[in-house]
Image (cartoon, rainbow, N blue to C red; front, side, top):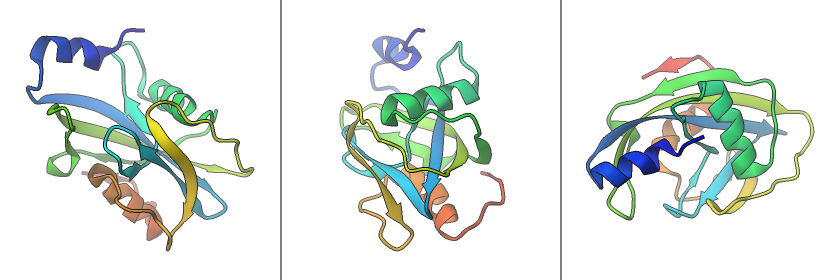
Length: 155
């Protein structure tokens, strides 16, 4: 599998691009799994870019496993997010306009978490004890989860 975004960035540099991405809300014991990201030093849900040769569901499962060690079969659509709230400007100057397909899973057993180089850490957080700062692009679906709003949102 290629790394589509790295290939594109090699050609266009910091020029803004559009990317399709996944975000995964993992719930266990009324808590949400958040990743302390090493690239932006904030907290967000696991997820990442959909490669050219992948289905969205495959990308979500792959990203979740790569970033956390968690393997899941059941993922439900939580929402699709796009527009100004999904623009990310990375510390290196790269600008990406994301379309994020957010999926949800609820675990019945606490998983053993295995972080990769994209994370300073991984942990589950209660609705009233979310860490800060939250990744700006992830706030919309984290907030919906906190409020118990599971209506599929297309934004």
